[in-house]
Each structure stands twice: as structure tokens, then as C-alpha cells.
Image (tube, rainbow, N blue to C red; front, side, top):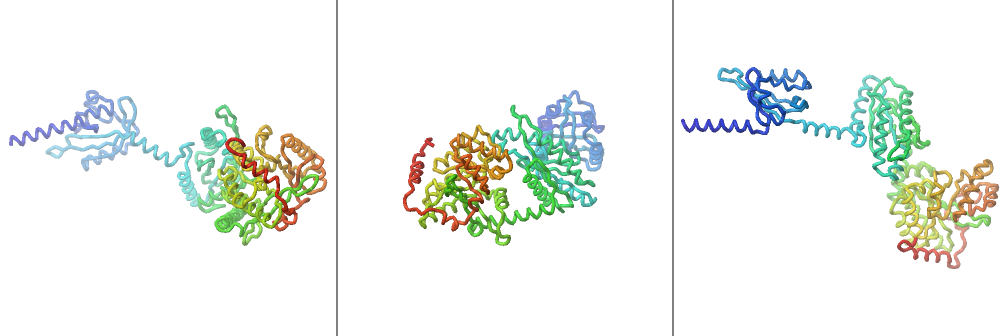
Length: 589
């Protein structure tokens, strides 16, 4: 008996130690819910001393943020089951609020009446804060604070369901920034991020509280116009606000930056029955706006859908051809270039053509645009390089003296680090000298990312390959930058040549371009020459060469062959080209 009493005393001591030094805050209240005891953890967690809380009802810590129904449920459970567990918000001694996970046990005496309440709790504020951050990360775009694609998809789906029940419209706006990539690449991602944050803030101010705006990724944004009896003009107003917001200059790091936006608009249920189709159709309309000059909006239509379907068919066919035998659907034609005033054949420009098994010949503007938009242009461009080299080899093998072949290079292909090595490999494989290949890059490509462009051009020149600036006068070139480019030829765009006879300004620009190019040591080729009057003017201005329907349409290789001289002796100029390649070591180029 004495041992049992001693054991009970020890057990009681253990309870006291557990109460005083436990990690959970604890308090003991009487039947009238007045505080009798609190432990050290309670003092540390709340900031209240034991003396300051003695005899008080725990409700003195109430924050007012916990709904009264929670307390009503708590007391009902305590009296019916003897325990309760839940989360409430209380106030600390310093006035700050904290979330606590609270457990209460009702203690009954021998008569079955409640004699005490024992409560324990932990501070879960940091856990809740972390969970809220995780929820934010799951629903919000980290960079801009707008909705992310996942959250936006969910909201769009909910609103479409609501609109379907009420027979209302949902408007969807797809927005892509024009010119953002150039700023991001040239000024760095930090500036690009700041610009996106600025745009996000502006776009948020263009919509109603019931609408939603999201960043879908990169420089793409989306706006949902909540269900209502809306007309197209309602979406037009919002689109115009967004365009205006996007086009206003932004000052970042002391620089005044300006972009614009291309916007596509589609409606449920007019244009699509579900959110996926709605987004796709707005995206199609956005690309139409971009294709029409950017800084514009366009509504989706069935005609657009038909064109988009056609582009998908062409993309599919391009992929099939590139994966199997490109020559089954692609072929090259060659437009001759003639010297002035002698009118002697001095080169040809390789032009790509595509034949679809069902649609027949496809416009180059169409299939090249599809290849560029889908990223297939690099692989397609490599086939053009190889086919041109193969054709040069073919002409030589039948005893003809080929002239240089000019190949158009897209922006994406020109930026590829594999461009120069691939061309070298093709020249080696077909055993052709470098002076029989020339590359043409458009003015706009030549002027973007200047240092990278110059490095690529130097590598190509080091390989002995000539470079021409194509469509000169149609882009946004800086004349002060032009002398730095390691190019040898300038091609005047056909739009200026065609205007020579009827537009004095076009004639003046053409003459000035020829004079400027010659002062820079560049040859000049005029494109699109169709009349003798145009040719006479170009001769007068000392233009070096021409191409156009007056001199010859694009021809098949078999039609070019009769124009080529017979190769009876080694061409000394090619020997010079080989020497030039051999001299390109280290920084010598």
C-alpha cells in the first residue's frame, strides 16, 4: 500500500513536470471557465504572465476574427462528448493575432459534473502562412502576381459553365507583346521581368472586378470577360484599353522602352463550346492581328479557322517531308542574276518551292511562314543548303562552270550555332569551293543582336562565304551600324525598284542607296527589275547587278544549265578562295 501511494505520488510529480515544461501551451480552468493555471509554454507563446491571466475567462484573448458559430459548436461538443479540437484566431499580449490549434478536455468529478477544463494549443500561424504561400504559388504567376494558366483555366471553365446555364456570353482575349523579345535579349532578363511586371499592373487596371487577367507564360497574357449579355463592342472597348496600356512608354534603368500588343478575341458560345477551343481560336485571331502589322486586335471568324486548319495541314506535311524525303515535296528553282551593263550571268538565287500531294503548289509566303512559326525553318534551311551544294556539284560533274548560288537564311537559322559548321560540312561533302555559296539575310535580321550577328558573319566570311543584306530599305537599319557588318553585297528591295518609273522618292532612295553602298565598298544587286526603263536607270546609277522577270524568271536546274559556261580550265578565283579559307586562323578574320 505504501509503495502504491509512493508510486502515485511519483506519477503526480511526472504530470506536474509534463505540465510545466511541455512544448504545448496549456491552461487549466475551473468549472466556471476561469483560468487557474498556465504553463511556461503558454507564457512564451502568448506573452501573458501567469499572474496577469489568473481568474480571467480565456475569452479575453479573443481576436474577433473567429466566427461565433465556432464557439457555439465548441461548447456544445464539450458538454455532449467532453472534448473539442479545432482552430481559432486569438490575440497575444502585444496585440498581434495568431492562429492556434486548440484541444480542450472537460474533466468530471465523481458525481459526473464538470469540475475543470484542460486546454492545450500550438501556434500554427507559420504553418498557415506557408500553406497560403503554397496556395498562392499554385494559383498565381510568381513574377507578376496575376493568375497563372492553371488557375485561369479553372476560372474560365467555371464561368463558361455559368454562362451556359444562363445563356450568356464569355469573352476571351489573348494578348501577346510585340517587341518584347528584342528588349529581353538586348537589355537582359532583369529589365524584361520589370517590363512584364509593369504591363501586368497596367492590364489589371483595364478590366472589371468580375473579369480575370492572367499571364500564361513568356510575354503572353489572357483576359476573361465574365458572363454577361455582351456584344462585340464591349470586348472591343477592353481590347482598345489593353492596346493603349501596352503602347505607353516604360522608363526602366534610365531608358525609355516601348512595346505594343497583338490581341485576338473569341466568344463563348459563338466561337467555341469549351475553354480549350475558345483559347485556341483567340490565339488564332491574335496571330492574324500580328500578321496585319501588330499593335492591333482581331476577332475570330470561321475564315480564320479555315486558314488555321490549312496551316496545320501544311505543318503536318512539312514535318512528314523532313522526317522522310524532303525532295519528294520540296525543290529549288534558281533566279539568274546578271551584271550591268554587260548583262552577263554572274549568279543565281536559290528559291524554295513546295508541292502538297493534295493541294498542289503552295505559296512560299504561306509554307515559309508556317515553317518559321513552328521552328521547322532551321531544318528546312539546312536542306536548302545541302540541296544547293548538291546541285553545284551536279553542274560541275557534267562539265559546267557553276556561278555562285545565293541562299536565303531565316532569322532562326542565322542565330543557330550550327549554321557555319553545317555549311562547312556540306561544302566538304560535295567538294565545292566556298566562293560558289553566298548567304542572304534580311535587313531586320542583320540589325538584331548586333554583336552576335557580327560574330556569326565573321565566322562565315572566315569560311570564304559571301554575305548579302537582302530587302535593304524595308527594315529599321541604323546606317551608322551598317559599316561594321562584314558583308559584301546590298540588295535593293523590289518595292523601290518598281517605283523608279512612277515615284521620284523611290528613284531618289534607290540612287542614294547605290551611292552609299559603293562608298562602303559594297556591291549592289537590284531585285524585281521588270522593265527596260528600270534597267536603264540602274545602269545610269552604276548598279552592279540585277535580277527580275525582265532578265529571267526562277528556273529549274535543267533550264539554268544552258546559261552556264563550260568548265575547260581551272578557275583561278577559286584557288584564291581556297587560300582565303586557309588564312582564317585565330583572330585573322
